[in-house]
Image 1: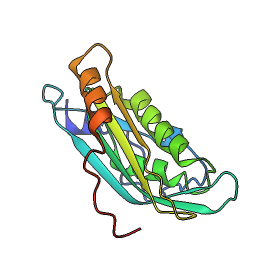
Image 2: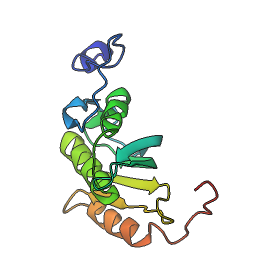
Image 3: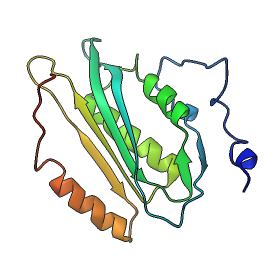
Amino acid sequence: MSQQEEMKNLTLLGSKETPYIFEYSPQVLESFDNRHADNDYFIKFNCPEFTSLCPITGQPDFASIYISYIPDQLCVESKSLKLYLFSYRNHGDFHENCINTIGKDLVELLNPRYLEVWGKFTPRGGISIDPYYNYGRPKTKYENMAEQRLFNHDLYPENIDNR
């Protein structure tokens, strides 16, 4: 497949008129063909400026979101992912729901071999919440991988000095 064919369905990358949507919008996500589907490899995204709203108080919640996945046939286009995460800016939901929804939306878009989403929210009211979601394709080694990573994902918590 040529690079031009690969990019034919990407509407946001390179656009000079990027629409910024201020409410949860999964339809903004785009994907492209993985030219290396014969390899297992991780793709990792770090979003240190994620913002959503508390559904009760309307106060802003801030987080760093970490997304890692092993693609199969599709990869998420990074600008569309940025705009998708930005669409949470005025969305009121609990931290746990945001992280699970992000994970499920990406699984629906990509059908990856493996995917995980970890949100590290700054404290509000003296407590921080760090929800973790993962997915491993059923009936494959990735399902076992997901189970093991879920059991062990926080065995060695990092030193938290910025929250």
